Amino acid sequence: MRLAKDAMDRDWAGPLDLDAVAREAGYSRYHFIRLFRAAYGQTPGQYLSRRRIERAEDLLRTADLSVTEICTLVGFSSLGTFSSSFRRHTGLAPSEYRARHVGRGSALVPGCYALLWHGGFTAFRNSGEAD
Image 1: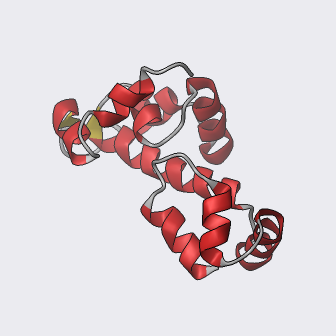
Image 2: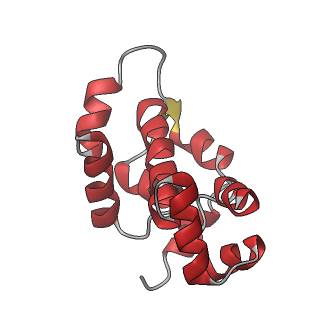
């Protein structure tokens, strides 16, 4: 289970192939979901969503990127899903979260640097495909 969780922690921004993660842990998909929930108190999908939202919180506080750019960078393919997941986790919409937290410290990192730091512009090249 720890190997699978480590793989999800390492590759949180990419699409989750639950079957591959389960195989890495040595279990079938459904048995893996049951064991993961028993061990960590949430399903693999819930865990991955929480990790992505945590990263989005950091980017909203520190990077001069639009909410849509952050949505794509953290691995969500839909802005609506990202916004509703973010609100469920934090109690605020992403734009409300940013308004509340920006201006409490140093200036925002320019968007171009933030994009390069997070793997370059490949996330945006790939996101242009049919969703």
